[in-house]
Length: 275
Image (tube, rainbow, N blue to C red; front, side):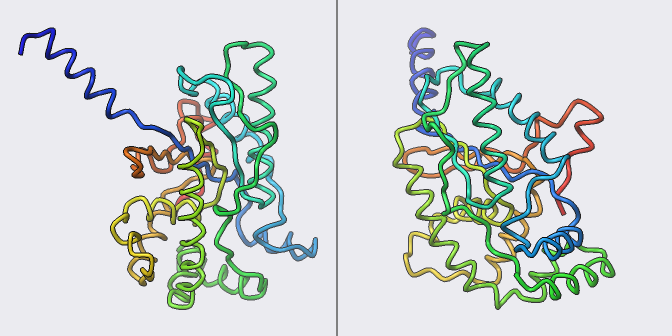
């Protein structure tokens, strides 16, 4: 094979490796320390997980993320070839709405910038969070014990309730699988999904355990759950987890990256949320 033939062959192979779709899973923005959330939720008479809005730091993160995504949208995308989705939980909807609006407004100054296919952010409840607890007293006690042990409340939640959590995560597993199938079947080349720590961690686990979930009757084990919680600890606020669809299979490309917050001291102060 001469050099020209070799070059052509390598180009064909490279093209065959290109994903048919890219999916960005973005964790929702910053929140206050969890005990503050519990107090605020109690005062407002609202649920801990679903009702509280994005805080000031979170709004900064979303602005920086908007700037980054505009610059990183694939150059071969055309208008309407990507979509922005969100879970129905308030802080995720807020982030997705700001991203959507910022990109569409930027089109006025940057005519070549592709805009999302959907006119409004679409709810995708397949990727809503695995609910923590509605029992505020239990949440306070858990936070107190977690501080005494020097670990994150979510990890202590797993330690204390692991076996009890399996049915909850099994139910979410079925939803995540349906959500992935939904995204696979969309004609868009890129989908941006604003979601949450445990839902994204479960999506990563699914992507890394294709053989297990091919069995429709597969039941999560406590070891599976530990893997999921380990993944969740790698996800800072507004981090980007990138999945590629290759030959109808999911491939993990990036987990919990924050390029939009790096390279500047003030921005880097906003990189938080891992444990």
